Amino acid sequence: MQRRKLLQLLAASAAAPLVRAADAELVVAVNQTTIESAPFFIQNIPGIRVVPVPNGRAASALLVSGMADAATGSETQALLNSIAQPDLRIVLTVSECRYRMVASRSAGIHGIIDLRGKRVAQTPGTSSIYFLVDMLRMVGLTVNDVTLVTMEGPDMPAALASKQIDAMAMWEPHAQNAVDQLGADYMILTHPNAYFERFNLNTTTNILNNAERRAVLVSAIKSIAEVSRQLEKTPAPFMPALSKAINTPVKTIENVWPQFRFPARLDQTAMQEILVKMEPWAAEVAKREIRSNAVLGKMIDASIVKEAGL
Image 1: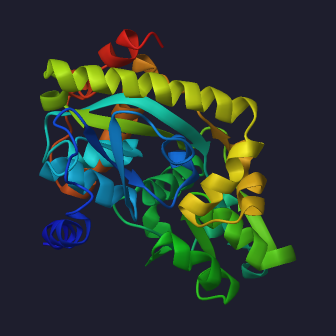
Image 2: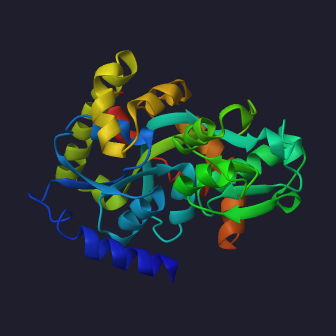
């Protein structure tokens, strides 16, 4: 029901942008609130039309419905949506990010173990909750040991500052916004072995098997790779455009920039390892059986990056 409502809303609000100027043009749904999306917003990518959407769930919904030819999203979205769209394929890792939990010192939280019994904000069905699950697992806890508070990322920093919650598990820039609002009361929680996001570009076999549209995708990925190299080498000139695109102050982006990388590549082995690790969680969320490693491996298609020479 929620997915149907989301698709209806997106169809009504994004119908005009989804009209293609040419048959070969690719419509790409991109999360407009995340730094991970930077390569799509700081410079025009020939051959694609970027459709900004409010989050990764919306981007994946457009891909699953056929309203978009490709979409950005974390590994969690690929796993959760590949059931409704079994032809979904991960073709490029656009960016990588080390997540950070933010907690309130005054709530008695100084380490992950101190989350026991605390109110922790997360967003169901996203990398937010998976990150929390993985962090808790590092110290032998589960979500049953905390009080889960369902909340969208933009609302978390103010809720933490006003003590409505004790901690939050969320991606950037929301974590940094929480740090800024808490001042001296903030506590960063991390673990070297906990979830490390791979933010990918996903498409379908329908695009991959169409020679003309595949060629457009290969060309677009070459452009994304070039933009990404510039972004990693000299990010400063791109900050104003990125700030405007994702509605986030340049200073905030600069503060969290060390958390990010923009590799524009696809490590097939590493990607399959993370999918295998996350699959039991995704299966539990969807109340289905765990898929085999072989099935998960088919979700990754490295042929496009090979054609692009990456």
